[in-house]
Length: 55
Image (cartoon, rainbow, N blue to C red; front, side, top):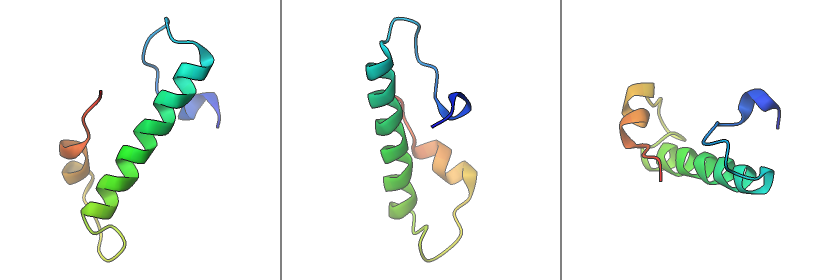
């Protein structure tokens, strides 16, 4: 993963905590895509962003 792909959360996170946070964010996106039918039809970005909520 490059630095561009990381999602900045806070300067207080250790690199390990940042990696865990990034992995959880990616899982949330993938699960929401799957739930919206991303494998069978196109999913609009707006539909996806409405469902993604930060912890």
